[in-house]
Image (cartoon, rainbow, N blue to C red; front, side):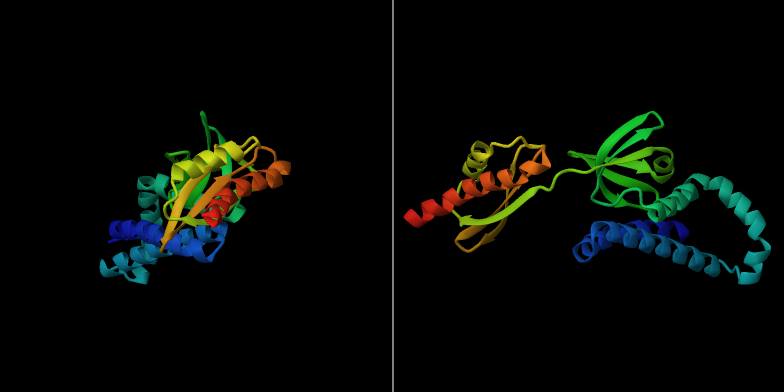
Length: 228
């Protein structure tokens, strides 16, 4: 039951994370998700020990010996859990931050996606990186503060070619960006589609100029529809 509770705790955290992120800020959602996983695991452990016939008196009498045996067998697991609690208390980084970690022969950079019972999940481009919580305590963490991104949602005709939108945006942007501007389709609404354009300037002071370029490129399609 304890092993099953561990699996349930992980799944509870994964299932609740999207719901929490829609209602809370990313850092708070990660902390609440971690607490839910820990509470689920603790509940499963108590129920399992109780069903095994161990009453509080027996548990108290054998606590010392049990702690030694379990501690030796699962020191890495419990070490990760306690390290996760320390990380959540100190909060050197938050879910959604882009962080560079260095130490223990590793140099990893990525966006913090989740803070679990045993490890921290990072996204490095399309790669998924899992780092144990105990390793996180021994590594240096340097949050990378990126300039505010331009995030534009526009409603365009359903006949529009997404490749044409991407090409127009690329041609219109005259500001150096962290990554190439990205155009994606978000929603189909009758005869219109909702298009989202994402771009991040390399220099924070050029955010207004970048926004103007992106707006000019997308507004051109609206002008063409009006002429038609």
